[in-house]
Length: 136
Length: 94
Image (cartoon, rainbow over all chains, first blue to last red):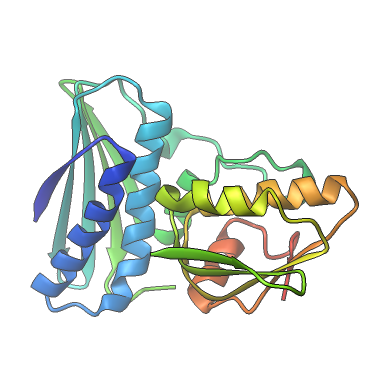
């Protein structure tokens, strides 16, 4: 299943609804929604915060292959932004010294089985895999 | 759906889903509270890094005044997110 969403915070609830529709269509338990929603929210809000260029919409594709769910997140007409190359935040710092933000990509890495990236013809594609039923 | 309720005993209850679209509402309430504050998360179903950011802002503001912020009664999924964020050991989470 694939759907496009406007690059606007008001699209976030539609993104979550898309996850629910995908799970229903594949007969998957709603307990799978939490991690998929969190991964998608972090990818989506990362675009809103840091990516000022690009097309008006982003594309989200969800696929089930056996016991694995593959999530693809595409931006169009953008410069490359490979989240797999970003440094890890320093989680050893005291809470009072932590910067606000910078956690989103780290959470994706913790929740996902794998995170991949491809950039071609100004299309940026982040691909995340997640095991079915592997909710937190 | 997200809701936030300030209760009379220094407790603030977060209810529902604290995603990026709800942080303004949470921030508006939390910036007014004075410690020591206990955040009751027993009815919080979902939190993202944006929601954690609002809690960290509150923690830093109170910490700067020598006041405490405790997080209590976390559901497993929410506790896991705090754990992944490396905050389970550094915030007062019970």
